[in-house]
Image 1: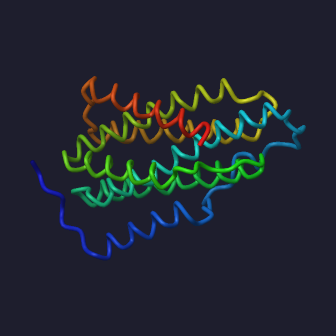
Image 2: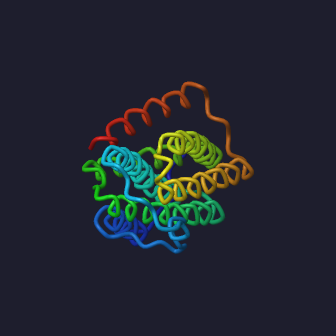
Image 3: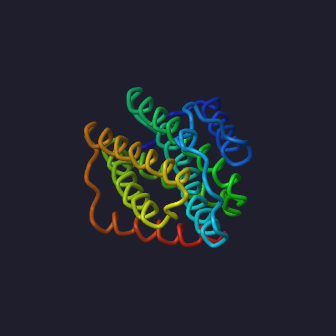
Length: 214
């Protein structure tokens, strides 16, 4: 089995720093939030606000996982071009992280209590995918983003119609995920075996159901 490319101590220290920033710092976006263009909203009913918070918390967990996955895949990428692609995707996903966290706070909610667990698990999965090879790593990225796209479409259908701000954020996230999936496939991402895709869906279902409440 192929070995990881050698990584300097500085790279691992930088990865640890990014993990701490993801989990403990207030994220900053490089792009304006899509919610900023939404006009004044009527206050949500209490049940609508609870549902919006839960859905946006799930989306925030997905972005915590995306930071971990792409950081791990960039760390273990075999080519500078692939490393740069993962790093760019992580920067765009960091916007999603900031947007969802800001929206959760606006709605009076909180992020997941299990974010360190989600991050650690996703980082390990990202390293495992990268260990197999670049085509498998790209294929994992493409499949992950396709599944996230479907998940976000489901959230667009479940979010209250009156919550225009959350809906605008989720719609932009969905567009970005489609672009990431297409880019990974275009770079030669291998299609994952059906059992792997099914296992990914099962793991995502467990995560989303847990994060909905915790």
